[in-house]
Amino acid sequence: MVSEKSNSKKYNICLVSPDPSISRTTEQVVQELGDDLRCNVIIIDGNVKTAVRHVKPYVEKGIDAIISRGGTAIALTRAYPQLPVIAIQIEATDILKAIQGIPDGTKIGFISYSEVIYQYQALAELMGVHKITFFRLFHLGDEDTVIEQYVRDAWKQGIEVLIGSIHVREYAKKYNLRFVFLESGKGAILRAIREAASTILVRCQDRDEFKLISNIVDYTFTGTAVFDSRGRLQKWNPAFASMFAGESGTDWKVRIPLIFSSSRLQKVLDGSVPGGGEILHTEERDYAVTWQPVWEGAQLVRAIAFVQPVEQVQSYAQSIRKKQHGEGLIAYYTLDDMIGKSLAIRQIKREILKYAGTHSNVLITGESGTGKEMIAQAIHNLSQCSKGPFVAINCGAFTESLLESELFGYEEGTFTGAQKGGKAGVFELADGGTLFLDEIGDMPYILQNRLLRVLQEKAVMRVGGSKVIPVNVRIIAATNQELEKAIEEKKFRLDLYYRLDVLRIRVPALRERDGDISLLARIFLANLNKEYGRNKEFDKDVLHYLTTLPWPGNIRQLNNIVERMVLLSEGRIITMNDAAEALELGHNPEKGASKKIDTEQIEGLLSEGKSYAEIAELLGVSRSTLWRYRRKKK
Image 1: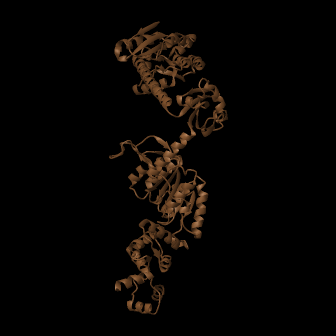
Image 2 (image 1 turned 90 degrees about the vertical axis):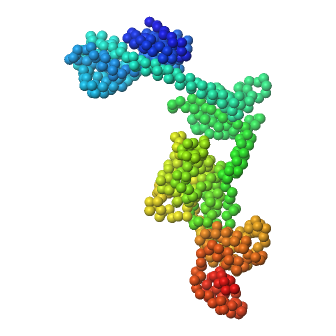
Image 3 (image 1 turned 180 degrees about the vertical axis):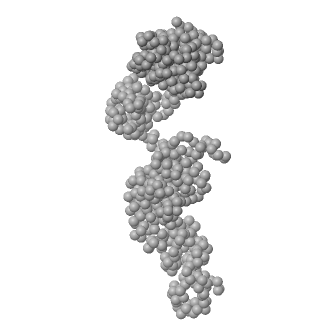
């Protein structure tokens, strides 16, 4: 029987009924709901053996979905994989309805799918209905191999009535057992129709999205082509065709196998290489090709080529580097900027050269002001990721919540005042380059766990987001703290420490760099003379005196003191008097500052021809202290 109930709606659904009772129930549902169904329902009688043949004419006309039950639904799914096939689900209430008319005391057997039996058992426990004495369950697709065995088992156990599907009915008759067909109620059929309509809607949306994506691919300037598993050209966009069209009137597709014969296409298709990029040389020009293998399950079915002229890629990369420079995502310092002739600084330069050739994480330790970021930039500029961005962040300069958003970024609307469209964190900004985590020892403990996860998985998730973003970043961290002590005090994670401390550079304090202090001071002076338009020189006593100081602020402090001398000194020569004045502005009192100074004694020694250095040594005070006291007495 074929019955069509037309609601003059957009979608056409074909319901294949393996039993007249399902056909009648479906007709009632369609009639009762009328226009509320918002689709055309075509009802066809057919079982596992006949359904595929009966549905074929309607498939050819263009139906949008199929509904059926049990094994019939499986057969239709296999025959028409291009269409959604929705299975009508049996419900526990349908089972209760089936056993309602069976007298008490009758031995009842039930053979069906596992989910149906589990539903019934749960409902029977709840309602206290325990009339079924024999259960057998099977999975979709197993009907032909197990049902007769299950019916035979029921017969041997003295079962009088069997409940089940049409599959069970055939064998129940064979063993002279009474059979009750497990009908589908209106609710189950309606749910199947609703699910079919929803599936159709989703598929229509998917088709629209596919058309949109196709349009995007067609209009992109990147040449895109799809090759099948045998290396034959299947699909391509106009940009790809224009790159390889050649002379007018020739079939350019004939040239493609020859052009790509020297590429890694075949290796991608046989799985010997995972894809990636290469340079394809042709007679006309060179192309940058990126390969993407396409898998279906465990089988590699095709490969996609993304093609751009090399000069176009180079131009784009150049513009990106300019943009990064404008945004400050660039390392300015190189190995040549590291000034010094001491043994300690030469050793560091050797370590930088070694470490730059790897992609391992680096931990730089040393006092504040020793130039740890300069070393990080030098490593970056010598490494393979030197063309990528260099991003630095001070982990001790932010509150916990602000540091989290700076590191990992955030999505729009995550918090009040959040930037529209969200914001990328430093991990995203540093993708393909180096991330310098300064003052890593000051990072809040709770964020250390999240940082560790990013380092392990090489992926980041923005604050308030749900999407995992892969990042390829080299980490260089720096600290002026003793992390081992922080670990003992439970202020720093041991596992994070091991992640960061793969390669280590200890930067010596300035006082440990024999011979470098006077050299650095002269270079700083030359730079400051150029900056301020001066022509200053150091008195030799000043240079000697600078080498005797402890420099707790290291190179940064030395540079600041030299700048003070340049700006505060009156004459062309920077004297000890100028040095004392500059050091007094921000320098801790030297040893001996509290010692009582006799000005008359100083004057007497000067009249004897003693130098300030000799007087300071005789009195047991520093030369800067000597100069300060002498100035106060004037």
